Length: 138
Length: 96
Image (cartoon, rainbow over all chains, first blue to last red; front, side, top):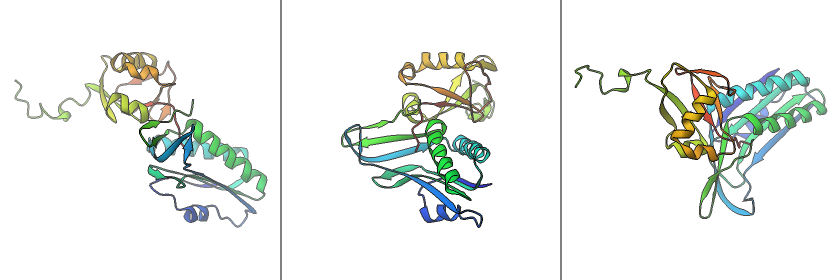
């Protein structure tokens, strides 16, 4: 199982997809997390993402290995963005390819759920009058 | 006053303090992405290190959680930290 894991300033969606193509894969599942304009009923103007890059890469590699042990996958892609992000920008790209779709769906779901729980990346939301770091997990 | 040529440079005392990376809300509280934190012994338990940090930076107590990573792995409260290890303060994560 091959994987592509990285932290980027901007996510190139097409390049990310290219990493998932595999001749034995009949299904490719992707999830893209994007910046929305409202959180807790407050208007968000933009977001800022910060990562502990070395540890984040290591944790994402661990998650990819866990998924590869659980499902028959050919490729895994995990890319997270850092820096300032505008409304609608992609901030995380998750993808898995496999012979059949069930494994790709399940692995993608697992990877994004676990990423949000354990990967050391932080989001700061800026509203019209102030900003705050988001405490999501735990 | 010492006449040691490196007296004023950080290299003159490379092992005096533990260097701790900080991120997100923890970085805002400590005021720096990397703090030099004095610990007397070469080894310290994570829970004791956290107590010392809470004394110096009381606002850290108000975070919903504060994990410590040692050499890029989440540490338990009982983990022994060598002051030369790569240590980081991990407030609640919010990626994705």
